[in-house]
Image (cartoon, rainbow, N blue to C red; front, side):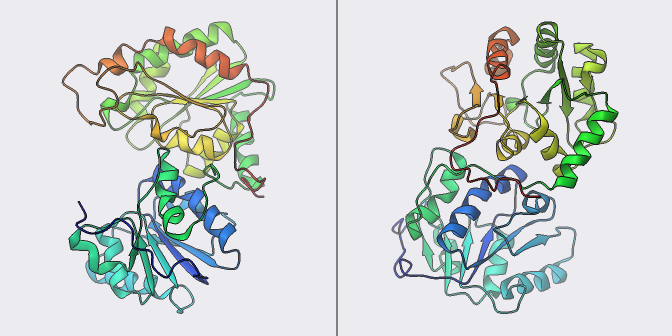
Length: 371
């Protein structure tokens, strides 16, 4: 815990930064959650040039974002000396003029190394522990409960930027949308059919609804809605789980299992095309929100803080006394997921599918996706 005041913002009220660097290295879903902060900063400082420092695997999330000048992509496979050279380069900025303000949302070692090289008058973060005090000039607490609002709380409390329930944003191009339609056509999806994306995987067992439950849910939806086509999403090392779901559901061409894993941008385009996304509490749900698609998330150990507080974005949980525990392991047989049956989830799926059109999320000013 910090041993100092949680608020140190002297001199920031009249700040007019020309160059701003935001630091959020990982994970992919957290970088999606960073995008409301980008939008908030651009609205407050429209003439500022805003850059992001993130990991290479997360950078595609920020492609085409009109609020950004540059995205620094950390390649973690480089050696120590190459890393040091990269940290120095980031600290100088792409134009060599440095930054007027750096905002660190994580306080990770690879960010602190960069801060050591950066000559910047304002290095802002959440209240640091004593061993990180030297790296920051200013700090302020986060907010909440929504995760993106918690992240943006530093801007709210330090810079006085209001929270207007800004949703995450992923900006797709026309070519990316056209490619999604091309792939769907190859998989036999016609314009008159209803696309539902399904994320049945998670690296943490306490956040993964059982594969058998997913198969039963898909089978029941298909019986009542023959027009629905299910696109099963998966990431590295997750193909076997998705194959189990597809085999158990036994829906033939109604369940689409891509032969090749979709890229992050392809997945975002598919999610935008979908009428509904159903899945675990992982990054695809945030992608869906960021392209305006309704979501239904099956919650186990996680809390509702990851659910965007807007129309069409829902989660379902048993509400056991132990929920949310936030743990990655469970000694109780993961009853929170095991006992959340497909019969309990099915009415929520039908209700979301029956909505006549996708909702326009609060804070959306029409620039969610740019071509």
